[in-house]
Image (tube, rainbow, N blue to C red; front, side):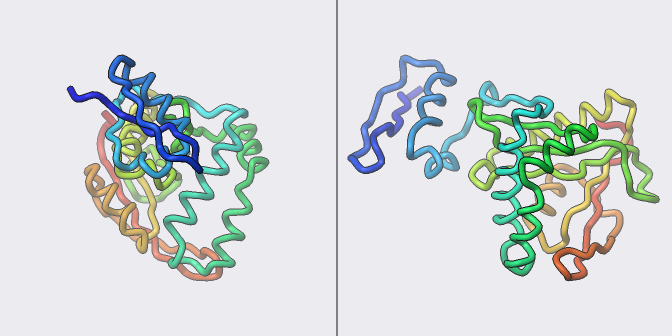
Length: 218
């Protein structure tokens, strides 16, 4: 396997190349994550599953959750929702909102990559009528630079396993119909479009697509 070289130079100076072939993948990735170039190069790196941590959210994660939500929403809905409406909706989900959600018992699972929170999912008993399933993922979002690398798939599978362990069979997800990347993501995971719904968002009536995975969540 070729040696892995990572830029760790100062932002204003020339990049420094360091041979990290003697390090474990985890050690090399931690150096990379601390590099000023990491946000630019993350989409080009295939991360090892050894770097992924899937766990329940804690109060200390509230600031990170607010940041993930803000970046994901601005990336997904810019151009779909009016700018002012989008900013208002994002601003409502600050650190305090997430702290309150945890205190209310909302189930939140975080996916971290090299100890950096990259995404989250909220989930529980299905709230949708006539779906024939018992579990639901209410939200699943990743920061833009972590999308398309398999982390969302890992998070989805982990939540599905948790729901199955609680005897909540089958799974439903609602997505904005205008959010084509999200629809493609759930279709690729085997979701079947079973219904449409409507939701008033930012003063507009938006169509929602409901995908389901019937049967057990294994």
